[in-house]
Length: 92
Image (cartoon, rainbow, N blue to C red):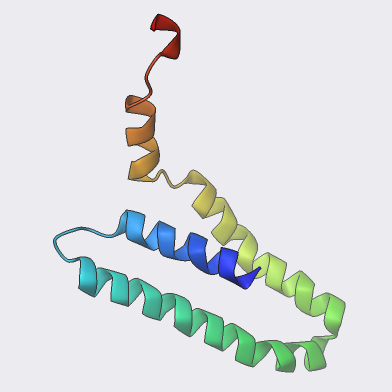
């Protein structure tokens, strides 16, 4: 499961990276994701021991819920280009 998550993350970061400053921007995006993942993994054991297992999941969902809503409304430039390049196969 982690490999699928990693593949999707890399794909999204490659899609939003500007080609002129690609290396710097991609490195910055991966460092943000790695820092967030490391901090979450480090804090999860402490949060579970402080709040209990079910409350830790509840607080995590409250924290990540707005992020998922923001990601839902972001339009990726690749999706818009795919819609423009659709060919009508009925005309052939």
